[in-house]
Length: 262
Image 1 (cartoon, rainbow, N blue to C red):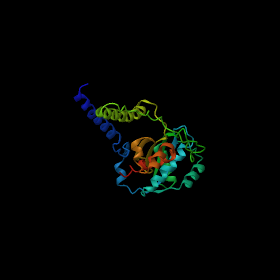
Image 2: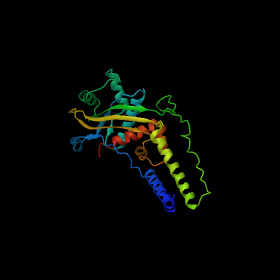
Image 3: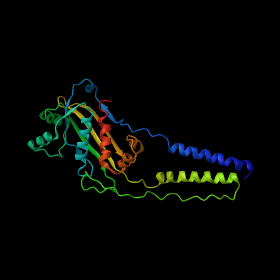
Image 4: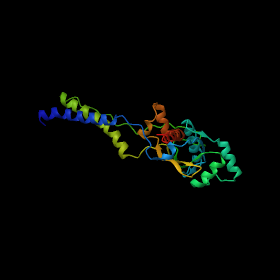
């Protein structure tokens, strides 16, 4: 290798390291729900009183529908746009009508139930995904226990041979930095993906007078998704998303409800 080549090698490696680190540290934009529909009728309506009917459960976890349905009602109420029918009143009607919580409504049937509840619109929802973290002990959908585990082993320590001249030492150091940067990326890309909590839901708002769908949204979140984690600021909250499926549900329902008046 000529002296010129040896001088150019550190520069080239430095450019590579800067590229890798700048790409890795790029700001991640917060996730935005885009899979939604909003009817033009909603903008001009005086809709106020809404009933959130029991959600349909399409996930294996038995408590998924109750958890997601209750959380969506909470986040819908927090928008300040609606007055929600009390859950006790809905449960009483279910008992009066001898309805099974697993019974599913078409928009027209749901509209009839909404009128019986004195609501102007009803929310129908389905839980499409509900996956607690496997390292979380779930006795009910309300409690979890985090097990602390170390991640993949760190890359091996790189020993730089300082017996060479200054340029070779710099080249080795930069090469070591590049390897340390690349190995974790390769592990993430090629290795098995670490587990994380997941939740998904499909929700729609139905006018009780016409049976028309006024709004509908659908999405699914994974707790280790960087754009989803960017929705919260605290580092602890970002970690919590990975382990706590109920907390992740809160964020999903918040984002879904937020699309009603966007």
